[in-house]
Length: 430
Image (cartoon, rainbow, N blue to C red):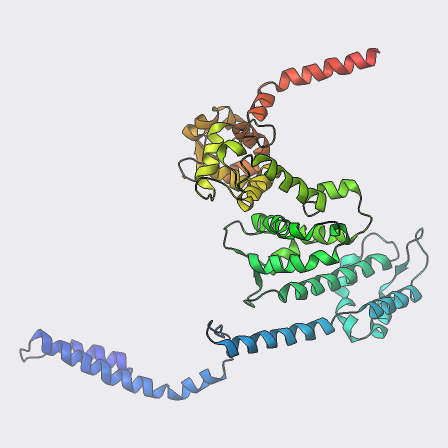
């Protein structure tokens, strides 16, 4: 009989003797202990199976466990080196291209060489074990589009392989800076990575070494502003690889990068010097920090006082002044107002009551209720961050609320359009 049933019956049996409540509790505990011990004894054999479960948690070494830390670092380095050797090197990539070109399937479409699935598999057999992962039906189907002969472009396939190899190489390179070994980089880790990357980027050859620290700070802030919205101080390596920022940074390897591309690339030397130069120009007292009055001259010097007040209330300051890192967040937010991370930054400043939405009071504090008509929020009395993003009017709304020039432009938009039309008509007449 089940021990629980025995215990239930025993307790349910009427006892003619009058015993105290404490005696009854003691007997109950004795019975429970007895039957529990018997039940636990029967499970001893079952517990043996637990020993076969593999270990899945390894405690990180403490700061004072120097030997364990060193062992862990060395083992990670060996692991990453092994992973690096598994990647295709330049010679192997050249051999792959030769095999693909040799097995192309006619007819050619223009100048683009094609290959069918049968020849695709033949190349996979000859290319070697490192290439095996690329020669699958799934990869072929992914690159198969509208070719009437059921072929894929050799160039597209080779670019796919190159991209995969590059991603793995970059992941390994970033992982070498992952001091914690947990798949993410702290600010100091990413700073070290970019600092050591500078000499490999020809577009940065002209930078003075004295500017390196400011350049690194400028570059790192873009990664953390957009990829660390919760401000945890760390970014997943996977997120770094998934975004386009690393592509923009490594674009500086191109010695013939156009002037236009440099101007639009946040990581270029002209862009970094522009941002830092603006900071120095705003710093009228040359103390390395910006006061509210100094920041008010940013851009066209038309930001509203109430918005500037909110900036210095919410952002990190030192004795009421802003440092370069905080300034970079400010610039990134204002220059990228269509991005969710920038809207989140500005939204926090506009949410003066810290309620998670903008109500009539909040918007009256900056502007007036016309904003509600633009955003069309779910709740007619408040605007959430998601409402702002969904409206596709986030950049316009925030510009109106924080910039007097933006407010004036919006207020006079019809007159400006009419004036432009008149000017166009005058030009046509001439």
